Amino acid sequence: MSDGVLDEAYERLHRTGPEYQGWLSNHGPMAVEALARHGHQRQVHRWLDDYLGRLDDLPRGLRPIDDWRAALGDPKRAGDWLAYFDRQLREHPWRDVLGTWWPRLLPGIAAGATHGVIRVGHAVRALEPDDTNPHRLTELAQALGYWAARWQPIPGADRALDGPPAGREQTDVDAALPGLPRIDDQTGGVRDRLGQLPGVPRWEPALAALRPARSPEEAKRVLTTLVHRAGLDYLRFGHAEPVMLVHAVTAPTAVLRTLPALDRALWAPSLAAAWAATAAMTSVYAPADGIAPPTVTALTPAEVFARAARHGDAHVVKLADALLDAHAASGDELLLTAAGYAGQLI
Picture 1 (cartoon, rainbow, N blue to C red):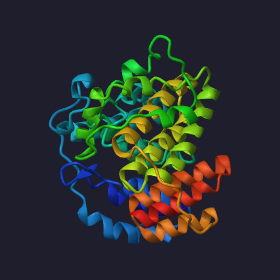
Picture 2 (picture 1 turned 45 degrees about the vertical axis):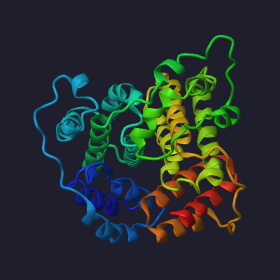
Picture 3 (picture 1 turned 120 degrees about the horizontal axis):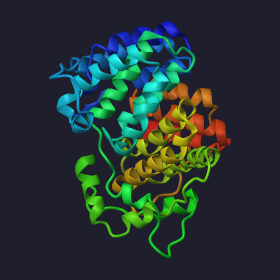
């Protein structure tokens, strides 16, 4: 990856806010990191030239964050959160800051339709080879600040993930994903849809159906499988909500990418939160019945990402990026088909 191009892109983007038009997520930092990661540096600034015009300015703060619990999930404090994490990452090693805040933020993984954790995952990956780079530290600060400002729990996750109902066995990803129920009214925005989940009788039992990881290694293995299976589900359900169902894949991918920077004691709860995110996005956006996987011309991983880069939509780029990781781990060619399918749908 060309460090200079990505850092220049971050510098341009860090003058903008984490959202625009009131609530839409700024996908710029995530998309340019993926483009640079896969060798498409020449497209980064051209892509930004087109994208920057829609973004809002960096939000101003109201007052310093003192009681963080009271400020968590308050989007009006976005400027304060950005300033808070900028200061934290100037004063402390980034892995220490991440280690402190990851367990605090993880229960609110639904933040910004999961874009909070997704942006953190991209920022952590960018920092891994260059962990003192000021532009990348600023990006992690803005990612964490966005997550904190939009912090939002998934209904029922705190209870369901404590264990299954009495007499109910837990199972693996292959069985848990097909068992997810659907909300009755699949209209409206993500917050309205998530708000329906407490009224779905089968929701919490289905969420509790995934067997908890008994070791860090198992957590990583199950999380890898979750990304793989969610990618295959995009082939069956993506036609119904091509953009929003991308997050059922990219959210657990972000968690998986962050694991190496975390204490291993956090890996099992990270899996639980990632499962809740994928389960929620599936339950509120996927139809009850899927379709047969479409036939898409077989391509190499490099060709798949090149097509996504030419397409240019941030969700297409980020999904291709995530699915290439899943393909590298599994060798499943259908994952490459899913990446191409998103480019057709979006």
